[in-house]
Length: 396
Ligand code: PLP
Image (spheres, rainbow, N blue to C red):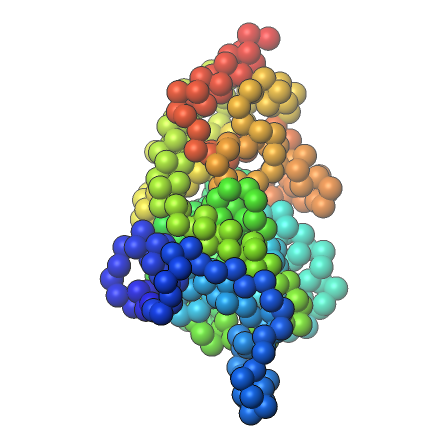
């Protein structure tokens, strides 16, 4: 169904946006097959010449994967999408597709650790250099551009510091220089923020997080114009970071309830952020929905809700953060976000294996930082659990 071309609500797109007109099954079929047969020798020849995504072989496309792509492209208001094996699969493939050897990338200093490690450690081996800038200064992006810049890599709100990038501002600079911008929209979700409508060229998601929503899928996706996605596809079939059909199927199933999950999680996260801010054991809270967030006005301009992720520092630093985490009964001590259960983690410990102390410091990740990914918990029970754990910190 071509619902994305009509002014339907995102909730309608989530339920009906991927349905085939002739289909009677309410739950979509799961195509596990790797090769697909042609109808005749002529059709086989035609299939082999088809532009991507081809019908012929799963590495270049699969009908179940296509449903995920159709749904998320519709949500982001885009022509096309390419689902991948993970969020990092989407990011890595996009960088490799758009930046040639000798090319230059401008990226934010505060980003997901995997993206930073790709740009710091792996990309230079392919002759790709990156300049890292403070995302809160739009002029810093412009100042970092060189004649070799081929990509601007953004993430807003950024994980784990919840800093914002002025998407319209950076996109305007990029467009005037003909440089594509890629926005990691994982933390916001397409329901809270639509970067393409603000002028960005591509959006990436870790589908592993809120889009699939149940902590049982590893997948990613890149979304944009048919022309750019086709170009990324050419690299994708060689890199081979292909999503499994079962993960794509689970992601489609999870997406049906994205609207309700985002609404619940955003409300709960805002409530918890306010609660943390008023507790004496807490030194700082990072959440764009708080009026005290230095970029709250920008958040109001470019976001519809403020997301399920927040981070904070306790008065007692690293040791106190550990005490707090160990005193919690409900959130699991784990590293993801956007799932049904709340998850708590210390980013410095989580990323310490792939980033040095200096790199963590440069990304603003202090040892005592605690990240809370709010789930679908009962407000009373989760707030009660957090309060008990914070009170235990004050008492010691
Ligand atoms: N982008 C962001 C903002 C993330 O938080 C993550 C994972 O935590 C990724 C990308 C990578 O996603 P994946 O784990 O699906 O590769």
